[in-house]
Image 1 (cartoon, rainbow, N blue to C red):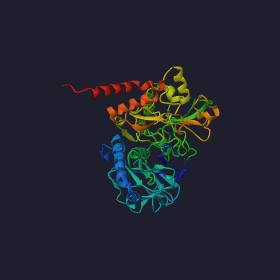
Image 2: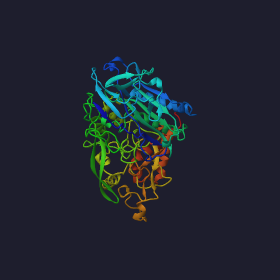
Image 3: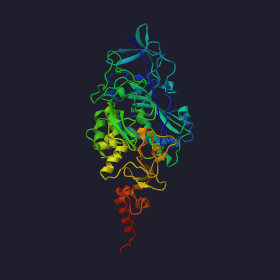
Image 4: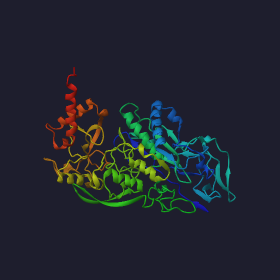
Length: 528
């Protein structure tokens, strides 16, 4: 059977040094399929970790910051290597599948039961992962059709030894690196058995990178985040996810084993409703009530983790980001619900790898996952279904009716008003700001301010577009290890907020009192 297919067009995900992301134009990435040499290949290795090989390009090796970046990259590689383990680890050397000269591909089920792709019009002389030339020594022989017969031609390279996935790490000042973008990444090749990623590309933008503290923390989490995209957290592969037994979660074409529910407007294969579905929710703002259609991930382990974390047993799915344009929208968890989670749409100085991210990889069907590697994560914890499914405006209104604090949202900004964060050991300020243009009605969350007209209020909202302009206390600095000095600083901050502690400071009162008691104890003279 000869099939003419459009190769998957991917938008590499890119991340900004600033708190927000920008839209960008999609750039084509051809996803190809790696075919193991033997159906028993997965049984030939006993590796207890995910083996990730990083190939540094010449541009990366020329970077003046390469030593420091490589130190942080090694940390990120070690984390994912310990958290994940391939269900079908590769044996011997990994050889990259060559790319076809055309989109005409013939899929053939061979005697070992594996469906392999053969190029009808031969293979390209060179192969690329995104824009990077793959070293010829990594390439396999060409699988092509000659006179109607599937054969392998040419010579194979040495391949990459002892690896389950190859990542090409680049440092190009690419056009996509404009506007403060830190990095971007994509998947280039998946295996034809479980569809697990086996090769990807990551570019670290040299003009945006700062390896000095505290911006170095942002770089560390960016590398961790980008590797997660390479490992399969991407809309490119939602339709390729598998269940616990290895069966596709999305129906497949029996002849090609490709998903057969069609493609969306971005040319991604459409996943089944058991992976992603669209839900309709009521969304209330200061300007009115709206109906919003939201894409949600609803695979079993992820949904269970979200229900437990938010204390919402009826949650119908985990919201995907709906803003930021191609490369951000649908590629991350909704920022409003996952502010400092690793796979939210923007990266800060202190992200958390939560059970949500690890559960996604568990549900992918590609990996064994060590859930003990999840960080403690407190954003939105136990705040209930009202927090997850309602707008921040409606949530704050409900909390006010219940005479409860409006945490984690805020509705006023004073440049010198600093608060301690509940969701991490740090302090920050309300990120409410005035925009030059009016916000869209559904993102107007400030109901009224004395002496201010409604038209003025329409210009005010949280700094983050990805968080639907909900204003929250955004991290500004760390309190290290709950030290006495840190607690003293937090206590002084609390007193600064309002003499005698206002309602907005009530939830921090115990921490402030404890700090003052600790100061008093420390001031006592030692016993004789």
